[in-house]
Structures are given as structure tokens and as C-alpha cells.
Image 1 (cartoon, rainbow, N blue to C red):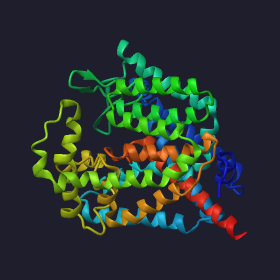
Image 2: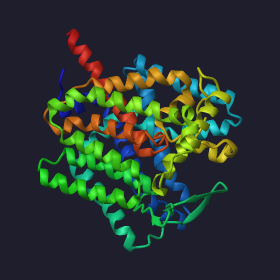
Image 3: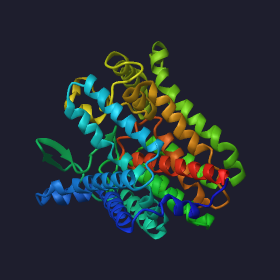
Amino acid sequence: MSMSYTNQSEWVAAPAQPEWLATIQLIAALAFLLATTFSGPLRWMLATAGMSFIAYLPVLGGLAAVLITLCWHFWFGAFGARALLLCGVLCFAIFVGLIFIPSAQQVAFAAYLFIPVYMGLLLAPAWQRVINWRRGALILWSLVVLAVIVNPYFAYPWVGFEYSVAGVSVETGREWWAGDVQRHSGVARASFDAAIQAAILMTIVSANTSNRFTRLLIYVATAYCIWLTNSKTVLVVLAAVVVCLEMSAPWINRLRVPFIAGLVALGWAMPLVGVLFQPRLNALNTSASLHSYEDRLRNMWPDAFDLWLDHGTLITGRGLGALGAAQTYFEPQLFNAGDNLHLYLFVSLGLIAAPLIAYVCWQVARARVGSDRQQRIPLVLFIAALTYGLTANGIENASIALVLGFVARTMCDESERAKNNEYC
């Protein structure tokens, strides 16, 4: 069953949801979006004014909106089997983490990092309204891209600036070099944040732009922005997004399932290369520009498997907080960034991650799109997230985590609606 993107937005925002709840969701979504997009200057201004704690209010406000929405749907709305299953998976991951991870604070910090995922899932109606605001998306994209393009000519005061929160040193903007090349971040906290934000906003803006020449200019400006951030993975993401946006509707409907299946297969296979073929890697002569990928193959991914199997179990994984940023503060001796979306989920959830990944991917891949380019936004955003997840864990990037939660909720809801219509 084919459904237009406009109609999709009507049923995502459940009619039974009261207006006051929709308003809370929209305010929380906009506050989080602006705080994430302009994180560098926002944190710098608040830190210099001695009010750095305010920078965390949009995240906590988003969590509050999520909890209010969850409670309302539990008592008055349709709290279905999938929502119950998701809550069960989260509780399971927390329980396993409390068993295998030495610090409960580490588990709690990991749960905090998952807030963008919760916001994408529970506040999907609000995010749909934000996506439909075409002018707002264009303004945000323009500011993100322009800030990076101008960055080489201006030294932003928030880049390299540090402040302290609860005794922990935090950067308002990361000063980062790859060899002799500076990685520019614009108004974001880090260059890779700016790159993926530009790609995501470009997807929404381009899908709402009918003129081909204008879309070409948008693609070129975004590519130059990403080039200045020196985020090689996001250049691959950009290429995938452009192909999916410009492909004809019949072709994208033919290729959507094998494309997503191929990305999942590649995402599962890449970490295994470093484990199964480690001796051969010694013969690699990679350039400095590919050093980060070689490090993942030789060290990070094999060490992540060790975390999974030696510090957890094959079936249950290691639980929430098993690897990633939470280890930085509580378990630095075992720190592993994961840097692969699928591996990150497997280490956290064990083999339970396999059917979870397969289910979400199938729900997204099976939905057909029409000739209207707007209909492709969830599919293209999901492909962008999977591509980014080949060499990054994704969950700890607020933009990607938000996309994953939003698309999973949107496409699963569409699948349920189509199923119900078949029975009518």
C-alpha cells in the first residue's frame, strides 16, 4: 500500500493525543534541535556567564516530554505490544549492565546518552511537524553549512574553550586536527557533528526542492562543508543520500530492500574482518588519511568483541553502558568507542540485537515510496544513519540517534496502519 508523505504525517500524530501534549512535544523538540545544532556557541556563552548548567535543560526537557508522553499513552492511548517490547529491551539492557558493569553510574550515564533515541521514538509527531516546516529546515541548513565554510577564515571563540561541570572538563567546541589539516566544526561541538547535521538537513531541504539546479547547488555546498570537516564517512553518507534522492521512484522501490540489506550485511561483516583476518592487516600500507579505519580494523573492533565475550556473555551482551562514552568517565581502562552501530548494539544487547535490527530494517525497507520526493525522507534518513553506522556507533551522536528513533517509530506505525487497512 502506497501512502503519501503528507497523509503519513496525519496519522503519525495520533488524533486522540490532546493539544497540550502536542504543544509540549513540539517545544521540547525545537529546544533540543536548536541546542544541538548551535551547541558550540550556546555552551560557550552560557559557560562564560557562569550558567553552563542551562545547556543541559533541553536534554532534560526532552526527557520530561518523553516521560509525559509515555505516561499518557500508557493510561489513555494505545500502548501496544511493540512499545511494551521496547521498554522490556531497555529494562533488560539496564539489568544486564548492573550485573556486568562495575559502576551503576556508568549505566545511568549510558541511559542519559540514549535520550535522543527516546525523543525520536516518543516525540515522532512533533518531529514530523518540524520536518514539514520547509523554511525552518532551509534556514538551519544554511546556517550550519555557512558556519563551516566561513570557519577557516575566522577563529571562533568557542573552539578549544573548556569549562568544568561536576569536576569534569568539557569543551564547548573541539579543536581537532588530522595531521596538518584542521577539522572545522562551525557552530557544532565537533566536526563530525557539523558534517552529519549538514547531511541530514540537506536531505530534508533537497526533498522539498523541485528545481534540479537548485538541488545541485545544495549538494555542492553540503559536500564542500563536509570536506572542510574532514569527515570521510559522511562524504560516503552524502553520496548515498544524493543517489537515493535523485533515483526514479520505480528504481528506488526495486532497490530499497537489497540496499538496506547490503548495508546491514556490510555493517555486520566489517568488524569481523579485524577479528578473522588480523595477521593479514600487518601487510596493509594505509595512508595517514585512512589511519582511523586501519585502527578500527586492528584494534577497536577486535577489542569490542573481547568486551562482549570476556566481560559479558554471548547471549545477553554486557548491558547498557558496555562501551562508548560512558566508559570514558567510569571505566577508562577498558574504553572502546565501538565505532560501528551494529557492533555497539551487539555488545550492549548480545544476540538479542540481531532480531531487533532485522525487524526495524525490514519495517523500513518494505514501505514503498511514490513519485513525490518528500515520501523518501524517512527511507533516505535511515539509509544515511546505516551508512554512518558503518564506522561510528551512531547511538552517541544525537542527530543520528534521533533519526533512528524517529524513522523506526514512523515506519513501524505505517506498517501497522497498512495492516489494519487490509483487514477493513
